[in-house]
Image (cartoon, rainbow, N blue to C red; front, side):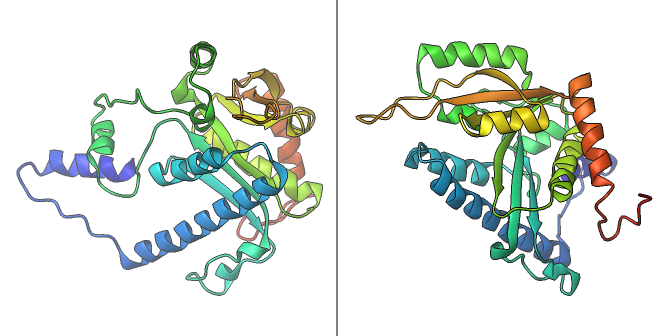
Length: 273
């Protein structure tokens, strides 16, 4: 968004003049490395899902991958054993060192990194067509009247511009609870900083109780997933949520913040314990 606002401002300040956008080579390389790390995390999470979520279909995995290609409107968090960037900024992270991965996706397909008409219209505060945009979970729902009714209720309860979805959450090894809490604290802080008022997450019979007990997510409704043709009904999937501007969320966030203070992060200074 900042790129397109810059373009807007330059066109206003210097009307009629040509505008050329050049990227610093360091920025281009940093973006390339970041993209490699992002896709390595994505692939690692999907491999974990293949092990643990047997009810996911080939179409489900295709959707999860396609959505990451179509939009950069997300934040990706990864916890690793080692950070090679300490000695070389041009190094990618080792996928085998991945301990935890989380991805937050926001509503609306976006391309923040390359000049394009859609983002330029947003920078000019002009209306854009988002009628085909969905939250990731919605692309996996069945095409039935039940789904239409569910989405109508959902978008009424959770306004898209104020809502984000946790679309990836995977742990690849056990980590101390304080470090795990630090990661979730960073995720929740990012959600607050972006102005989100609601957080939703798709869960199943196994993961739902974890998010409810650990982070106080509440059940919204069962997701109207399509039947598996010729096979047994898939595992039940549900949509859980947290409202940010509530005492429930603030209590969880304060607890995570206190736990996070026990974890020192290079560059952030020392804490008083």
